[in-house]
Length: 611
Image 1 (cartoon, rainbow, N blue to C red):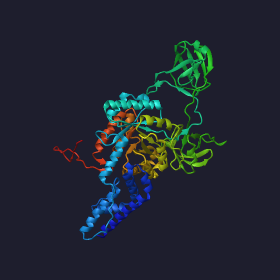
Image 2: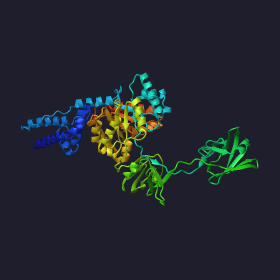
Image 3: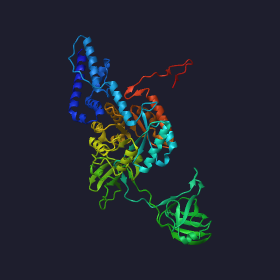
Image 4: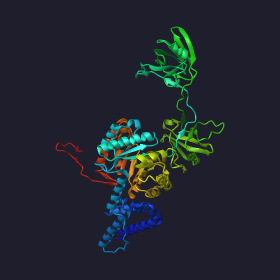
């Protein structure tokens, strides 16, 4: 009896603390859009509850046959009140009378489910016909989107189209959206369009040119034998728009006028290798030659025009395009990362890369981590000064890597004062207001960013909002972010698992995505599960075992996002199949026990498993 009374007192105390939390957050609760009032209060209750370690209490309840409070996200106060009632009944049956409890009016399970489904439909559109979980598909480049592509994607099971506004322009986005909407109308299905706003771009910048060299090479078989000579375009210098670019050789006009089939153009390349181009075609404005050995051509290489044993002319190759500049990095190397417009200190002999955002380096301090290229290169800041920062490389794949421009930078330890909107966002917002249904916002770090986004969306009342949770700061402040998000209806959350894993460490990703799912369920907000879902299948047509399991786990979200790829139709169909099957076994955190078509042995004594 004493154990039951102790357990009951703990539950009553927890419920009382939920009331205190709601009072403390009264101003934030009054600010939410009325359709979110009950959801916001339940979120506050859930956050207050999860400030306690409930594991011992849960085990005590489970051992005695009571609810262990393991699935109360959507209806916290009601779950505690119901548990108190069950405990009161058990105590009364044992001849004691518990202290009176104050009746509360928390949202009940059915209402919580109804709210989550309503908020999901209002954000993502009508529920798919054969499943509850939606499929969002990222559009490829505009040139790859026609009505045939749209028909295939819709037939396979696409419910939402995502346009990444970090690429292409308004004309391309409009073509993509209109093409898919036409196909959807023809098929009689609902389709919503999401625009991923570019946001601030924190990327590397190359500050030097690569080596000026072009490589011309023939095709060879697996034994190294030439199967097709390299075709070298020969053009007069006066007409050569891209002299030396690729397999193209600019020829002085008098020499070009004298070219004949069978002539040889000989040169010694950058490796001092003798190479011969046999002239195969001649015309008034262009000619062509065949090269059967690989040549590395740099400015100043001497070329001789020969016919038989006679040398008719000589000249030197002019300019050739620079290769892409990359810094070669090894474990322990040091690198200077420069702020925009800054220059390296005189005499400093370190490799240099630039950064697109000055605000990012302003927040960098010695000891902070700097992660490049989606987690491939890890560094630590040793010095932060007016020029930028000196970094020490601590991890690269295989001990050596090349790092160039346009590679992402993550600063997980730095408190970044980076603007939420980048220079390309106005154009993307104008397109979204005209042609889309919802916008996805990147780089959200706190409630102030959410309110800035809401302010920028004034006048675009129909646009729904999805907040991408992709930084350590966003995860740490997620409850406050969700409360601010609920000041505008409808809204949802995307778990941007790629950036989140880079920022927090891959070993923590599984834990963090679970916690985001729990908090959003408490707020009755739909979640989009994103990043590399069936990526191998979409790209190559062959899934990996790990990504199939990952796709099965995504059933606990309201929507799953697929990225583009040549086999995207197969990826959509596979995900549709996985989701429909898994929905029979799993709903949010709950396991569902449908009948399993299993038998230990069939009449012939062979184990069987039916679909």
